[in-house]
Length: 337
Ligand code: FBP
Image 1: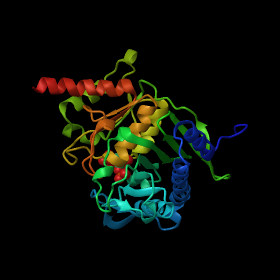
Image 2: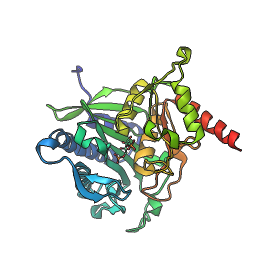
Image 3: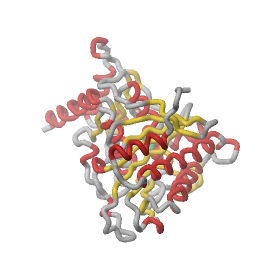
Image 4: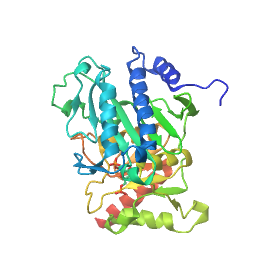
């Protein structure tokens, strides 16, 4: 262990003092996210032993079959913030509407979250994650009206994810670089393990569900053919890695470089992933680490959402790889005109 390990709590407070002179709400909010992760990590680990595998028989607001762990993760997040007065409300993949928090009348922030990312991995012992994005309240939100809180991802004050993999990690940015913390289960503390993460400009891996290849637009298919061609000087063919959990694929890309794609296909005309609680928070993290996040045509962080469960196409990762993808999309569009 490092001579004097830096805990998440200490790091956040120092970061807040340096960049967000407030009364500590942001630190307490992030510590509450870490608290949720400390509850979810062991529950995910023992899910097979405590009847937490499988489906609950319901669908979530975007039509996915809900897993028991989806419901547990969502409940844990809602309860963890219910009594804190830290957030005015919470938007979750598992909740149809904005959850206004009674104690949040004076709160300064909104929380957007995908409580359990990669839920198709729950029963196969695969990696999963939690995604979060935080926006400042600007007041004037009335109960039931979500419009005022729909803002472009570039206005987030904090964003990050938790990865439940071989170890449990929390990676966050408050707009001043990206840092990663590993959960020391004995201490019950997240300790700084990945300081000032920089996403390599180019990577060796691409992540995409190739099962949809023939449904993708010509520009997307041409890009995949390009990365699969053999040309060692340009680092091709790239290796295919697709874990079934965006957070796990994204973490690899932050550390090793590469690109994750989820374009439109016949079942997902606007892409599959949700803009406000999947694409925007991860886009903020990746761009803070020097990477890039776009729809293939437009920066993810510049999209003004129209609804809380809006979907978006996404290409995210190393700046050079995403730029190359955008070039293929633009050329195909040009050729089609
Ligand atoms: P969930 O948040 O519902 O898990 O959905 C997102 C996700 O599972 C990503 O983590 C993953 O990359 C992708 O969907 C997998 O989708 P598909 O099975 O269509 O390839």
